[in-house]
Length: 337
Image (cartoon, rainbow, N blue to C red; front, top):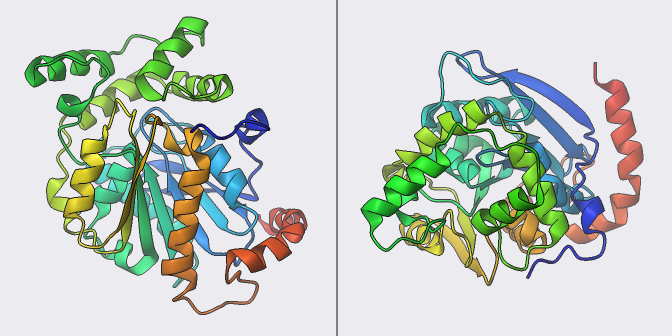
């Protein structure tokens, strides 16, 4: 079910943003933000996962930017967001950072659909219950994520006994050993641990380069946070509509996590299990992920939001206007200080 066959390589290349922003979290940590697409179009905010960066969302951005305004940011320590501020690495820091990004990237009164993959989904859960989610977020998509018991439920090393499995996963995922260059062996290991068996070589290559670019200290320090993750109590506080998506071949956050989330969410907007897809759903199953985002935008954002000058009411109208995207993008760049 890995769909990016023709044109896969180009879809995996991060597009040039219309604007780049920088904002600060409450502890002073600087966060890198990118904006793609048309000003005035429905807003979608994307939060990436552990060891990734904005580049991970490239296929989704390519698919959505013609008729959406897509905002994405580097989690602290990843990509172009510096390693850490005084607040350190914690789920509270994740929530603080997300709140800062929403405040910096969205216009006053503007709401968005928020999608989080893996640690990005955990970021959404960590922020559940904060007023900002009710005020700025119309709906969320939780991709390949979980709320607790990550090491015990993982199947990277499929040992029978949960206690032993947890210990082994803690050692492997929390290692500070350098990943080194992206070799054929490195790609095989990454594919086994994070992707489905049918993932195209171009997808594996792109994901490997992103993951290997993450500083090893950042990788290990965030692994400690994820190893002790417990956001169960936050699920009931996520009162906006939330859809859940997962691959059946996900070894890091197996479908059991998605099913628990779907059962506990106050307003579950659907659970989708993608046959044969691994943990990297936005790359492996871009069509399914973007379709889920579009549905949330259509049902929960544009359907209830009054049109603003230049806004896009639906995907059909957006298609007619997409030919103006490049011109609009150039204009915004020129007007940005």
